[in-house]
Image 1: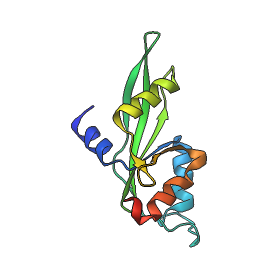
Image 2: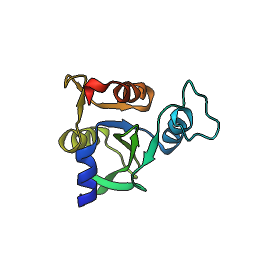
Image 3: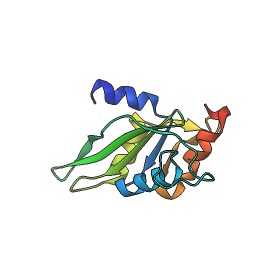
Length: 133
């Protein structure tokens, strides 16, 4: 990992497994900068921190296992989005890599701050709860 990547991993407060399309949908639904905002949903300021990285987390059958990684600050909270994008994917290998390198906790340290796109509401809950930060 390069220095900027390591710095961003250290700042990460929540990790989300999401495709590019899912990230775009979250931004469109929840960002104050959305093209067609609805005040009841679009209340989160999103700041994109990087143009994206590809990180190799291991190798399987001679092929690299890679994830695409993007960081955003949502109301000032650093959130890492990742997606398995290589030719071969080993989800257990990715989970183990995340456990080793980027495993923030929330809910007073009782839960791993990681979810898939179906549970993105956990991120918004974290952002809204001051006591977790």
